[in-house]
Length: 249
Image 1 (cartoon, rainbow, N blue to C red):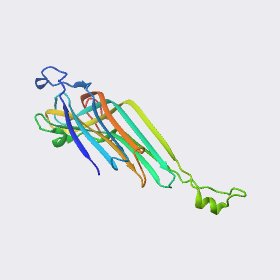
Image 2 (image 1 turned 45 degrees about the horizontal axis):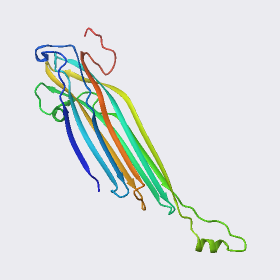
Image 3 (image 1 turned 180 degrees about the vertical axis):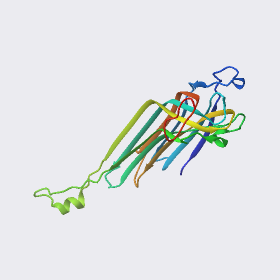
Image 4 (image 1 turned 135 degrees about the vertical axis):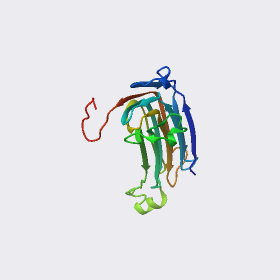
């Protein structure tokens, strides 16, 4: 049976520029060092699958935007993905499979100053939600061994097939642990003149699944997803989708 748990973790970020509500900065930046993490594990005795999702919000410094201007928004973060799969194949011909997956999705949203719950009510900056980092790991094992031949003077092939069997199993495991810094740029386009709140909305999802007709505790999967130090920057610009725009425009 699938279990889904959702945890909302809002990280409050201090404004980099003092008195931002009274100023009109052309460039701003903010950062956070808190770690947001989600982890799940499952084996053949727990059930078929499990997953968990964590949502983390980060507020960027407020910015005043003149009429018909754009805001370039850069998002950087250090992502740790840990996946482990172990599959035990018994001599029955059945397949044992373990799957582990970790995903970090990112959506930058903006709204006029004071808008509540911008990750739901705000407008997505172009190009829209992206996969910031991900990995899917699948491991399968099947064992199907038979005795072939005969024992001279003792037993022929039919006798061997009827009276002997090979017992045992094969267990294979794979674990990966990677950490890397990622970056992506977004653009809030053609804005009306106003003060805006801009939020980076991270969705961290960990999934683990085991399957097979004859699996036990030795077939297992684990996934952990974490995002640590992260930086967000924004700058007033002129942007275009079909060529180079003159900086004086």
